[in-house]
Image 1 (tube, helix red, strand yellow):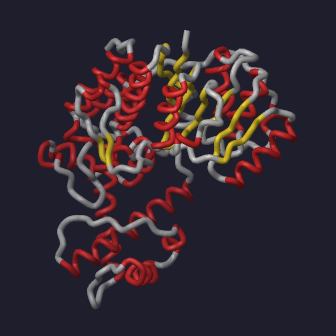
Image 2 (cartoon, helix red, strand yellow):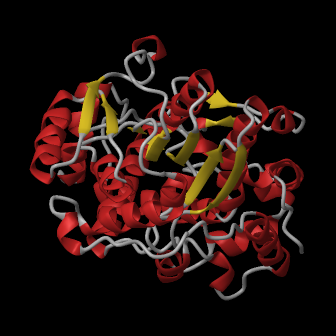
Image 3 (cartoon, helix red, strand yellow):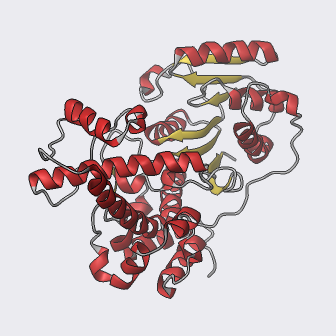
Length: 402
């Protein structure tokens, strides 16, 4: 299948695909039987009967698991073809390793890829670079060095600003920090309208970046979105006029799907993740037994340290702090056995839903890019910032005037 070239055509193709597959990706799957199980019982049966080994190894690539239904495998391939983008890598970058001091290896690799994608748009002189949600300013400081430009870093955490200033002084780079919350645009008047860069700005923060760039008529925009679910509202519809034609409103659970992907989770991280799932499922089993409730009612966010407790201590803490209702008497082994079976079935169903995370993420990113295109005279495109092996959040919005 030929991939659409224009943002509008790409968004339309993704919109049609996601509308046709909404029955598969929209229903929640954790500790509940998804609505699509009745529509496609063979797919549900296969997914929930996959072995734990297959789920651990191929959760992000279910088409590799034996017995994967042909129609589901075709659906995955079609979705990924619509979500395929070419690399924006502009070529060689002179970035010796000594420049990576105080930056961890993965972050440094991402910054170098970012530099190769955008440096040919950043000529010396002119307005300074604006590093959005800068943290310690690693991105802005590096781009300032490579482009011979000044950088302004916007960050709301004073400790990170102080650290960033020291790093800039040590490196001899002119990076000026602004202690600001970017969600309050009225406070950004002191920030110059320069080339905007944002590497993995979350949710409302990258939306604020795009809106600010439009308001001040920034000369160029380079935004790699992340964590689409990190928004004040519970759900989100399309931003662009083209996207709105499809009417795809996604709740926070769907918006979280792209960020839920782990490329190759470390064994220790995988164990911690499964333990938390089992403890949450065990609490749900006890609540159901005590109240007769059928649906799943999620527990609120809790300190990670709670999940390091044994199960009885965890339940006692949740009863005390959250008000969990449990039976007067219950058996730990039987509860955890039921919870493990529940979690396993949920992981299989979630694997099916998660197989569509790439076209969902592509839809969200292209919708933002098309919104930028509709409101400016920029030439806007979307492409790969780096290989997915470096970070699954590897899509970059590039908008340039002239």
